[in-house]
Length: 332
Image 1: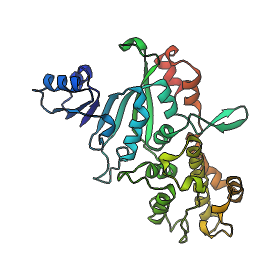
Image 2: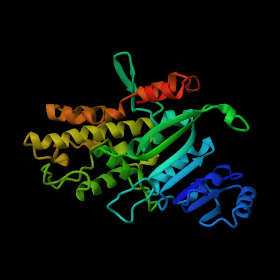
Image 3: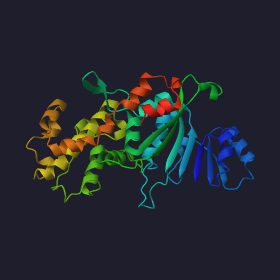
Image 4: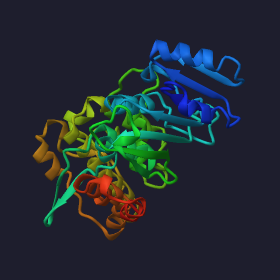
C-alpha cells in the first residue's frame, strides 16, 4: 500500500496508479482534492482523501511518497514518530508497516536530519546548534540515503532553496540508544509522558537490557540524566537538552555494560548522594565514569552520532555544484 501526500494535478499520481498497488492520495487543497477525485473516479484501488497530512496515521502503509511544503517538514516527522508510524517490528502484527519514505526536502531540512550532536572545531568537539528534534528522530529510526539534488528550475514557481530527494528506511541495526530514544519519541496515546517514567518502564520490563546478564537490582533508574531533562517530555526539550540526553544515554549504556565485566552489581539509585539535589556540573562530576577497555569499545558503536562528515558536506558546500557521483562519494 502506497500513500502519496499532495497529489496536486496528479503528475506523480499518474505514475503511481500504474504500479498495481493500493494507492491513497492525501490532498489538503479542496480544489485539487475534488479535481483528483474526478480524474481518478474510474481508477480501481485508488482513493483520494481531502485532509491535512499532519493529522493522518501512516502506520498501515508500506511506502510514503511526498513533496511536502518545506515549512512542515519538522512537524511531519514529529507526527510520524509520535504516532508510532516509524516503529516497525516484523515480529509484531500490530506494529507499523511503513518500510520506506521518499521525500523531497530542502537542503536545510536534510542538514538538520543528518546533524551530529557535536561538531569538530580544531581539536575540540562542540555542541552542534543544528542538532534538534529532526536529528533525534532521524538518528533513532532511519537509514538516510540522499539520492540526488533537484535543481530549482524543476519547480514552478522556482524555490529560493536547494531541494534534495531522499529515501528514509527503518534502520537495519539499531543501538540501545536508538531503541530507547525511539520509545521516548513514540507517544501513541498522546499523553506526553516524562522521560524518566518511560525509561523506568523500559528498564523494569527489560525491553533494552537483559536484567540477568547485567546484574540489575531493583532500582528505579530515574537519575540516569539530570532532573531538568528527566522530568520533561522529550518534545519539550531544547536542542542542547536533546544533545545532553543522548550523551547521558551513551554514558549510561557503557556503565551498564561495564558492570557485568567488572563484577559490579548495578544499583543506580543506591548512591549515598542524592543526585536530584545536585547542580548539573556537580551531577556530571559525581556520575563520571572510569572507563574500562570494554566500555570504550562499547562507546565506538555510537560514533555515528558524532560523525560530522555528511553534515559538513551539506553545510559547507553548495550541493547544486556537485554531480551525483561526487555527492554519493562524499556521503558514503
